[in-house]
Image (tube, rainbow, N blue to C red; front, side, top):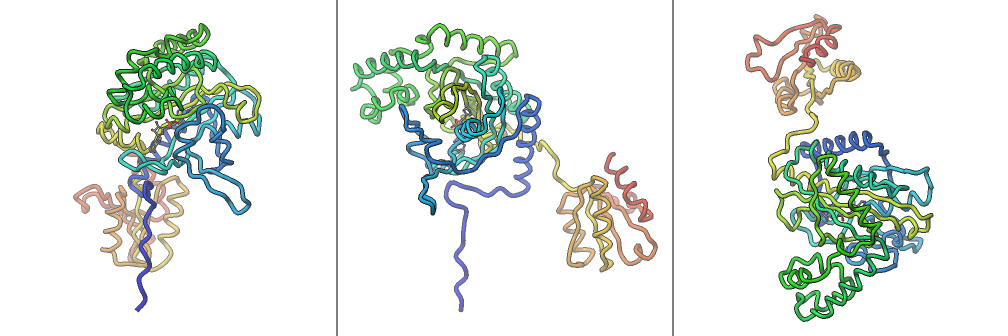
Length: 427
Ligand code: HAM
């Protein structure tokens, strides 16, 4: 006997999304697309893989994501490529390549790949909704990008979201600050946690982010970035904070906010969902990257954006009890046809052309079997056609949500079907 085929499953850290859950995804993406349009962003599509140098630019303190988590591979032409771990670097690479007029405002929805230890809310393939605005360092752009994220979270029903903000300064003021921080960490090295006692000098800023009590105690007594910004960076940061206040968006200064990429300058921010476990409660984050276009070989161009994880947004909505659908994907009509002809095909086509969502049965199954599928589909109405109806050029319309079919069922001439259904569905 032949062996049955091996059972394939989605790889560790990845998942399939099927209906009805996929309707929740459609709702999020659709809501985001509409908002992005209102805010003046247009859709951008980029390859899922790039030359590895786009993400790992080989300068300064490499980011955690680019060094430890990237999926890197060599293709048959001996090119070293990486699956995108995020959206920003590819979008900026596309900006540099095509040089569209500025300000250039783009939104995207994309999978992102990171070789992480999978757990609830942390995946090896996750999905992000995001925007990037290139060509301006106006603090109004920072406010606009943060406001778009905030309004998006409101629109999808999230209520328990906090906005944390910080400024990374520009190269010079951050450079001066990092020297001060290094001196402080060197003087207190023995008091750091086991990991950072060994590694702090490679990326001192990351110690600020360490959750362990030992590191917390050391950094609490040390210098914090916001106190060491130059006058220009401070003024920029204040204008962002004032702008947010003017829109009624509450933000909290979080001087420890150090994000996982090396490209950030000035404004950085993160949105945390209090309904989620604190290890994976960041539902979105972003900031300014005024040097990234140059690092990718383009002209000096400021930029700012954010990305938000779709899986985490859904987890946060679930945890807040706010999972009501943002759009309805149930059919309006289900066509049940026991004539053995192609009448269902014609009725379904006419109803669909009129704008209704129509499902139908196949394989000429029994009335009972077709009705079972109709009920399961969630359709509001069934259109029934059997040999007798066909002969009389009629159809029967049944309201599937009403208990009393005898009362609510009605027959109409088949050339009145579309008009009658349109009328009924409107109600
Ligand atoms: P990020 O903070 O690394 O930033 O990711 C953005 C969001 O993606 C996170 O807040 C989180 O919701 C989600 N996310 C990240 N990693 C995972 C994962 N392994 N599993 C599930 N969800 C995850 C960026 O990627 C930047 N490109 C954001 C940005 C845009 N900065 C400027 N412009």
